[in-house]
Length: 282
Image (cartoon, rainbow, N blue to C red; front, top):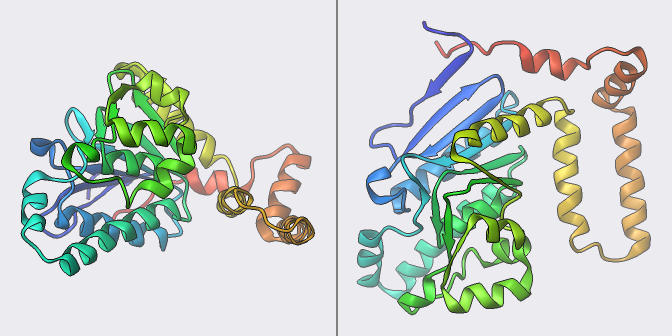
């Protein structure tokens, strides 16, 4: 049966992903290194289905998204784009909506997400980075929103990229299509940390460890809170909603356990559960 602390889930063939689980952390690798992990319709469908499955899995606590080989993702696959260039406007619209659904699911996932940017991220690859809650990049990574070079625009990914870098930066990078390095990506807010290639996994694991120490319900609510406060609306409504939220969490089983653990100087139950090895599927 192998090591019970690590379970590898393989999607049905042909696969474009590698998916592994260890102690509550699900690691997803885009697995098309021969084309720099570029999207095609199969990868979009498989990644969407995988994220939906993880979202419904109570044992999944953190999701790490990365690329196989030397690249994170080069965006759209050229052969896929060539096929879609011959398709009708309606077929292209349906195709774009499938990518939009993938981005929406990743952005709204109920689990914390970490982009492990191991190499180049272009176009839709930048969109994946922007959809994740935490983004850590190798200092060798390069980024680009190069759609205008093809007579296109980064339409589907624009809500997430603009939320990450702001309108002012987007107005530059959307129009010039120039590439930029990890340091610049960090400066404008696309990523949170820059790491040496050798220390990338250490930085990612540190974030996983921090997240696993926190109440899973509280982490989910914290993510929702940040999203709501981005466009807060009426002050009285916001204050009432936030008061309701903290009151509900204080009397919840997780809140009670967390407060009691702090006062009793012990670990809360979710840390003990997270440390327990997961059992393999039978």
